[in-house]
Image (cartoon, rainbow, N blue to C red; front, side, top):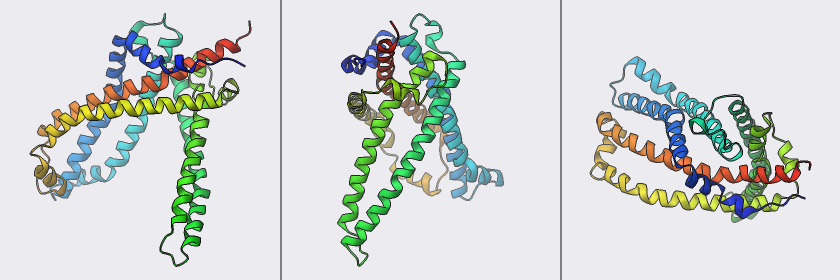
Length: 302
């Protein structure tokens, strides 16, 4: 069985950020351009139309845009998010697996990005289906337990207990499966072929170690986001200070939305969110590239 150095894998993202700061800055810029800027523009557009509709000042076109704006915004989020994830994931994998190919901050748009995007899309759909299927028996069991503990129909503690136990079970299942299948992304990138279920074979015998690694990475991500939240609370407080009544009037349609006042803050929070998202994703994803590199090296014929 191949050995696995979890401590080395855990620090892969931190080492990459320290060793390739200029590349990381470029990745943040790409994420802003592809992943967030379209969403921010759509948000501003939809917000203005909704405010005009609430105030009774909307034209027929604005009312139509307000009605279809949210579904369109969700579509932009999905397409932009998937594209940015594929491009940036490949940049991280190229920096770790093909460090000599450093031109343009490891950023490319080619076959590897398309294949990785396909794995992300298929894996996301399968994960959603698994989650939905797993929740059905849990909800059914929770309803039966609630009815059994309180037949009069006022709700019961039994249902809450069953629901909590079911949530813990599903979370453990998702963590275990995700830990086994995440190396499919670097496997697809390195072999330039769609790989998904092959990762199960590669990670056989390492399920517990990989699950522990995923939990440790989740804890690290939460810690980073908590620090970032504390930092972002300062500009958020500056934005909200003295604007509570104005914000309420905007939301109620009593006053038109002042996009000139909102625009600088939208830009600021978009940039801060981009920095946080890219850094956290590097910290969380790079270890799985290192896991693949370790296991693939051990599995390769002598």
